[in-house]
Length: 134
Image (cartoon, rainbow, N blue to C red; front, top):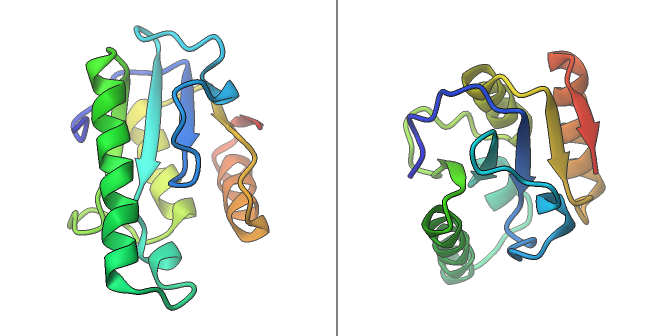
């Protein structure tokens, strides 16, 4: 599901599990030929608050279905599954990994609801010297 995507992207659109909407403003001006979507299942978020395993399964299932829907529409989707041996376990580390693969000029996302997630994105963007837009 986009794991081998290594073409240079103009924008890397970050989509989190509570933002699964094709009409999201993060996709405004999206170009299927030059932009990519990054979706991440990370241990840090899955274990931050104790959750029932079934809830996590439904949550990740919804994310995977949305990623498939985007792929069917021609979007370039980079997807980090929780059980991927290359998964680094945190949003910041996964963003870093995928920025090195896709080399985008800018990171774009809808502002996350959790401040700790926003902080991770901003820290990664600053460290990677990438523009960030929410």
